[in-house]
Length: 332
Image 1 (cartoon, one colour):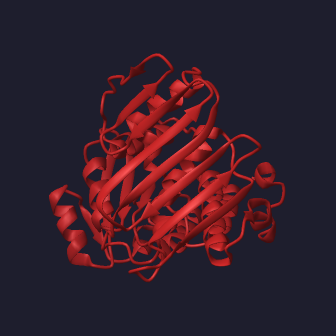
Image 2 (cartoon, rainbow, N blue to C red):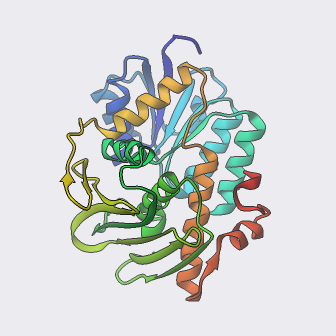
């Protein structure tokens, strides 16, 4: 694509789609040329606000017309696979919001299609672009807290009314699932979880234990039952402990004889994520997190849900094997 502007369409003009349009309109290398939504009035409102020339009701209207180079998919989870598959097959670069698909079968189809078509696909795990997470990854690489042993993550708060097609596991806990993979550099072997649906159609609270090997594990808590929103993580290492406060982008490092809270320059994670997406496309480089990361995180989410239902420990190898992916990462 060279140094030319990337022509982008936002598919889905709801809460998150509006944010995508806002940020994309601010990136110099982007020509935001279309907004798509089944609610045309909603799409028109977004288009007017950010001077977008084209509005469509059906995403298929931007296909096969050479109108755009890339799309960001901000629609309900149950529509992700259908839209992503058509866009990939049409040769468009895709950023799809998490979770990549509604279930593992759809995720595998997206993965296989992207690989066979040579498609460029990125999954919107926005926390990877949180300045605090970026700092933490660098600190872990430098051995600031030694070897990471355990991760404890909490993602709680009131129910977001815009969410109606998935529960807390695939909507919010999946962020921390992905971050455990990111920080540990591997995926878990076994999962045990409890939870249920107290006030909502899908599960609205969960406690999950992820076992990575003989020494490394992670505990995840997520719910839509708490009155106050909290997003935090504690990483315990052989030589210290690190705390991440996602909402304010803060990190605290605790060592045996001192504690530090480094100054971290805040940049809106969505701005960093979408800028990265565009710059990688301009440079024809790989997009990460991509379909592999999206599929593996969804596989762990499915294992958590299976454990909640069966009240027993679930082997991730077994979950992947049931879908023809043996050897865990080996075939991905």
